[in-house]
Image 1 (cartoon, rainbow, N blue to C red):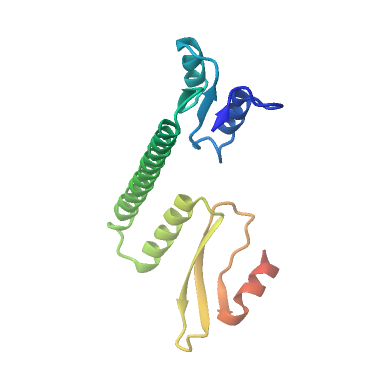
Image 2 (image 1 turned 120 degrees about the vertical axis):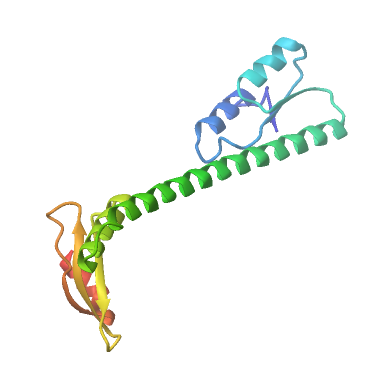
Length: 173
């Protein structure tokens, strides 16, 4: 709730600050004002308020408008999240189709692995995507290859003990 005539920062200033902040822009705002008339209501709504209520008002009306504003904001947030989820799923499906198209005609396991690492590295926008075999002792891995987006990134190819891998990688990078 924001009163249009608040001291220091008026309701419109608060509304502008909320709408300008990516973390806060979806918070519903109900403007309260003693200024009646269509022009004042339109001005508040045009500024980005979710609702505009003229003083004096009944407590039940205020509660109903705040409740409606919150419910609408939750629905908008859910719709935005569903859209982001749909876009992410679509991007993942496109990636899987590209990966399948690239490796399906290949017969050589090493070539399949190299191709998959390259495509995965590009998809994830990472500098490196390595692949390894776990040795029989299950304490050692043999990194047999790695896709490097930029050639000045050091190769990880070699045998590595799992317990030493993290510290060794920090030294190597």
